[in-house]
Image (cartoon, rainbow over all chains, first blue to last red; front, side, top):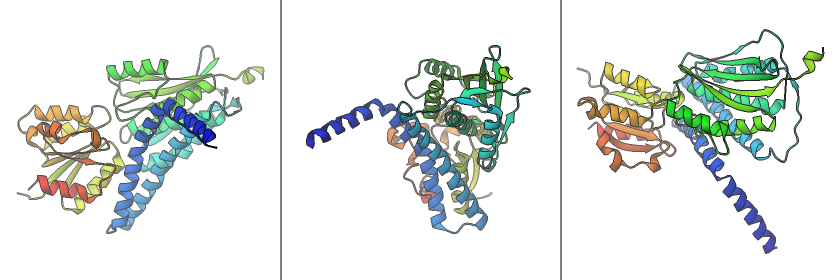
Length: 246
Length: 124
């Protein structure tokens, strides 16, 4: 029994050692939402606040908790990616992105920001796993929500390239521009990533790291385009040939 | 002349910034919220605050850029600063005292009243 326990402990320790950067990054990423939820809860506990403020604080607590839970769910999914079977299927990205815009509308609205979908003229189909693709776009959107300026819209863009063989889903934010140093660091890490990517100063980049793993599992990849007034984080995936057969 | 002290809050999490402002307003302070270092510098140019509550890891330039900028001018260099950060364990008041930092508060363990207690202490 002790031998088994010893082996289990070694496996656990090895696993912990291999995943330490991700664990540290996860701990860092979860600090901010937990600290916010704690502050808001303490304020509610203290009382002496108006009913409208109470409602607002309760809404912020639930939305912040949901964001933190999305990250932990993605982390769990990422850790089990190698063991799990998942279906690749033709997906209409327009429909998927419309659903995401609808789902995130309350979070964006509570943050005084908007999210919109820039539609593609012609219907497109790509090959992906619906759950993983959804998680990637949600993660990019969470990132964009934080970095885009007040009263700005975050935009999801869908386009085909490489003679229609590839589809790009991008999430455009209008936040502060990435500095040249940060840009070089980000590009280098995106092209050779086995560690969390520091997207911007206060982020450990865990969300991007997980997104890159999800994209890779679907034979796709993620990248970033720098703009003077923000950035576009995107995922490239293969187009489905089903439409061309119609 | 008004005795109400004005406090500049520089915090890129809008809801946390609102929370600080709520606590300080209740305690009788006038608050100005800015979400990044550049906007904070503009606000300071418009009117010198009596104190600054500053997060460290901001969107765009970090707090250290702002601290350097403030120290470049004789008037802004005198503004007392409270760092409110989840990196408190990695920072030392001995190292940052020369940048006008009077206190470092750990965001993850603070209670709302810690802000007003710190302000009362440094604005005596």
